[in-house]
Length: 493
Ligand code: BES
Ligand code: ZN
Ligand code: ZN
Image 1 (cartoon, rainbow, N blue to C red):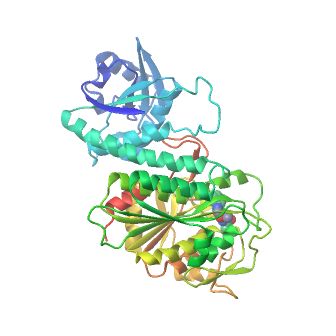
Image 2 (cartoon, protein in one colour):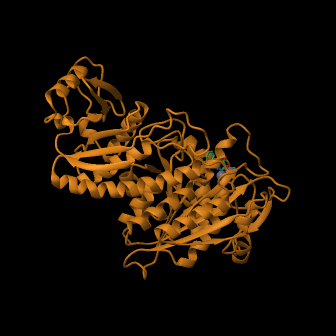
Image 3 (cartoon, rainbow, N blue to C red):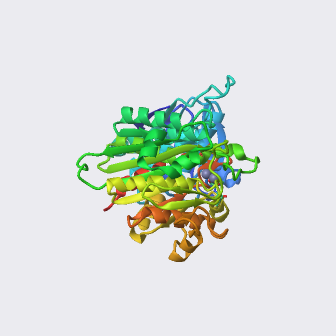
């Protein structure tokens, strides 16, 4: 998809147009300069209540030889960058469905946002809203059609210059999310831990960051027995990815460390899951994919940060040498863990990753993981769960979540919850007492984060979409990439 920026009157152009309409019975204020026939046609539709301007509502309007896609953006006083991103996703998907190969569209005014930011949101929404995972199937001739060219029409030369920068940044972000989505959507036989590590290495070479991969032998040497314990039930070797990026002027600074759960398939192990929907457990590496995507985008944007990305990757299977309920493993760093339930494997692999993070003397930690079904129950698919051992750091992550439109909601992590993960035979056990499952999972991780400011993001509910919506497509969402990049950008030590 090619993006270009133009100035002039959007509605005087000949290609199909995307026009944003605010909720209400009148034309939005930005319709002032539209050519009279378009103004009239849209006004008539609004009057007749055939179109309302509700967020993500669309209407395909033929006008003479021209096609117009109307896209609702909701009440104009509620317009945010994320609503612009959503509307761009919905409208461009409508354009694709209509078979248009090129469209022109404007840049809506968003209170408190620059033209650059609006253009960036439009590009992200457009690319992500038309994303498809087609690698593994045959396409019909109709499906082979693509939306090839999108022109952003800016009101002034000054806005056009800003929009060009927004386009460049938006493409970097969107392509990183697309990469993450592709990895999430790939089934476990197409993305093994080894293949995921190869993806990371190739991206490191291409975009300019370091990537070391530790195989099981190296993991043993390092003492990553919690990761190795999970990997025992599978023939696929576990891989531990350690990536590092030093942006301009950042090399002497303590790094920010991102950690992502990389379970390429979670059968539950010996504590096996029911077969209903088990195929979805290919998305259990979504946290890892987010970390990879963020490393790539941060390096490509050349942000001035010192960043480390850690991804422990393995399958969780019930093979003949699989670990068993009751087994005790010693994690990197020396703490022993009683494995009560082999399906609570994410916290095990993250325990070793948190232990490994200590080597960098990190300034702060963030982990992302599809960690608990309980989080899906508690928060649904509209936000991730956030838990922290450090309120100021938690506040920074919340702000980045809000800004990126990848929303997070905090759950408490009081010391009382730690009681639930105490073991009779080891230092900790890997399940709680059956209550507050999302929080007791975090209480377990907290034991391995130590004193370093740390935030845990449970993305189990938001890493997979059940239907197309805004810029989300049914399937892997690639959530976390944009939040982490925003955090790397806004990070205040
Ligand atoms: N990967 C799952 C969590 C999950 C469930 C993610 C549903 C997405 C959708 C995780 O490894 C798991 O199985 N957690 C268990 C923990 C329990 C055994 C304490 C769970 O949530 O049931
Ligand atoms: Zn599990
Ligand atoms: Zn899992």
